[in-house]
Amino acid sequence: MEIIGRSDRIDFPEFGLKNLSVKTDTGAYTSSIHCSFAAVIEENGEKVLEFQLLDPSHPHFAPKKKRTTQFSLRTVKNSFGESEDRYAIRTKVIVFGEEHDIRLTLSERSNMKFPVLLGRKFLNGKFLVNTAIRNQSYRRKKKNSSK
Image 1 (cartoon, rainbow, N blue to C red):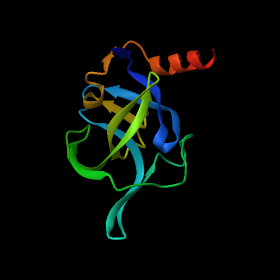
Image 2: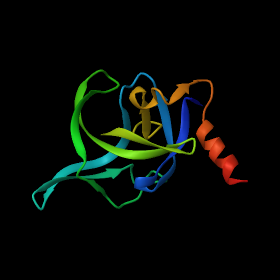
Image 3: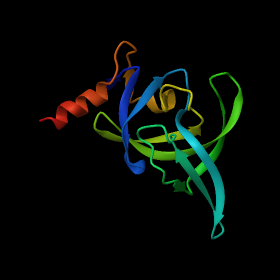
Image 4: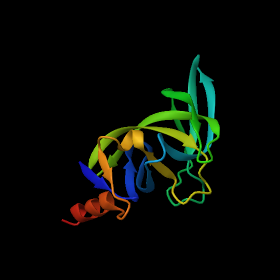
């Protein structure tokens, strides 16, 4: 089992995002990613979630909206203990060079330092968390790419 630190940088290949800063949060059940826009539209009789990740001010921002038919609406408790409805999507992440499935809720995180939280549902059984370290996956990636 890999040891992940309190923060890292990981890749989201389906979104074309590389080295995106993430915070590990064992207090959060679900994982979330910053979303500046989300709306359900109907297309050919099918519901489609259209969403925009990050903000224009973020260095990884890409103006093209993402779309998926594989989504759900979840009620989650935010960091203030208040319940709120959020869209949830499934995607892939690359951590320590391995691809993993992840369920992310789309959340307004513009005032937060990290655009992504990795919650314990994702971390459980894959990683041990050591809050004294950070960027372990990113360091390994940089080390392997320089060989």
